[in-house]
Amino acid sequence: AQSVTQLGSHVSVSEGALVLLRCNYSSSVPPYLFWYVQYPNQGLQLLLKYTSAATLVKGINGFEAEFKKSETSFHLTKPSAHMSDAAEYFCAVSDPRAGNMLTFGGGTRLMVKP
Amino acid sequence: NAGVTQTPKFRILKIGQSMTLQCTQDMNHNYMYWYRQDPGMGLKLIYYSVGAGITDKGEVPNGYNVSRSTTEDFPLRLELAAPSQTSVYFCATSGGSLYEQYFGPGTRLTVT
Image 1 (cartoon, chains in turn brown, purple):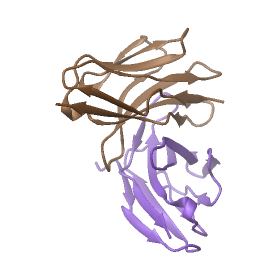
Image 2 (tube, helix red, strand yellow; image 1 turned 90 degrees about the vertical axis):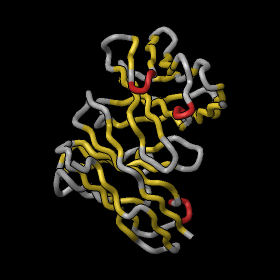
Image 3 (cartoon, chains in turn green, red; image 1 turned 60 degrees about the vertical axis):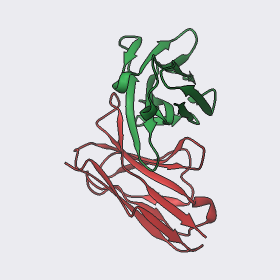
Image 4 (tube, one colour; image 1 turned 90 degrees about the horizontal axis):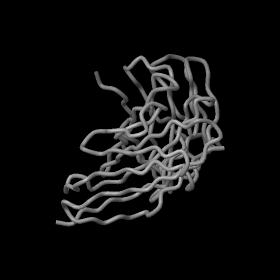
């Protein structure tokens, strides 16, 4: 069975500060990992994905994530937060043996202070 | 190219009523999914389909049914609505096991 844990349901940073959102996963097969962002009252939008190529993955809006197998982690970072980054962020792991179904973490709400 | 569309956007049901949530995609994707999102929680998979005529249960299938007669459509049926089914429902599609999922805007359902 697969699982995803996101440490910190709420994270608050100042505009211009580093953003770090934590994600740890459990998977019995080599994982495919994703970060999605959800703005209020909207669906989920893909930020970036890891599918066993480069361990450092760059996504949209300046976000990136590093896959660390030894730590079973896939933390999301952005060097400088912008007010428009305020949203809910979800880490997910997919199971290609079961229709590529996604298992999501509980989400982290990012707040950006002026 | 609309992507993934869901109807209705909002719905209020009484306990015991039934309804169908519609999901249509124009991306020619074989894989389709239904998730529910409860307040403050991540999404949980209800059902999924890897192609027309093929469906399978996800993590939380009880109280729901699906069908997949065409590539484009994947309706979700609630037969006897219960308050525990109050949630936001998202439909998603994917081009295959190596590809990301694309989500619709969601249907907000309240059962009272």
